[in-house]
Image 1 (cartoon, rainbow, N blue to C red):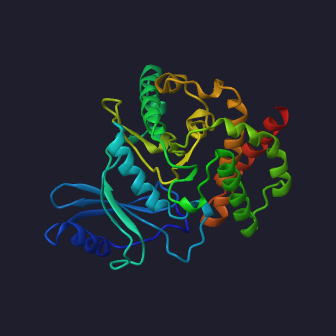
Image 2: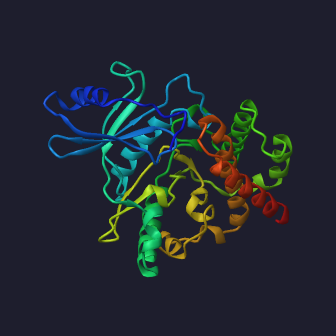
Length: 323
């Protein structure tokens, strides 16, 4: 998918990066772009010794990004390493991370290739029992991720925007996002000041969240890879949007529906906790706002995401009004 934030490179540039990190005797056999992502450019690199890597390249410095997207490549690298060290969750191994700008004028990193198929492409082909088994496994892995605790609340790689209270952190995230929309001239169909006023009575519910938990926040089916033959999860990807916050913010708990088997695997029904439903509505509103506003920044080729997210925002505001 096209996005303004993606950086295009040629195979000879990729070879220079491989030379620097793996030695000049290691040659690229095949080089191709992975197009499913919507922010960083990603490339599949097949090496001469049959090893497969993925190269991810950050946007150019002159590309304007949302405030929460600053330093998200560093977040992905550090979170991958953290999850790899502290859990059994299958995540790619980071081989190299370079912010020196000596070889190319972009931050980039190289990680292991995860085999398998995105669950969003595979789910319709699976039996109900197979889906439940996978969802149970996702719940188990998600719980392991969420059990990692951080020093404060906020986006992982933005320590200058960390807070001791989740209410403060989320309020700051929401205000920053709305400001991104204002600066880009995005018409949300609702005045940002009015929206903040409508959300304000529900924000005290966030005070129930006492522990800054690691939240993947983008663990939808497209970021979960599965072996088609064994139906085993081979990898959980794209943790660049990770933050220290409320585990209920994971999209698996209400953004795109809730799989009962996933909740069983997770071991706790977060939505049934006091204030859980209201907090989930706040998180959904934030997510739909992100999905609307980012379209202007990325300049996607179609308005499909924006139109869908606008519809979801309207629905969520109606739910909020009924609470």
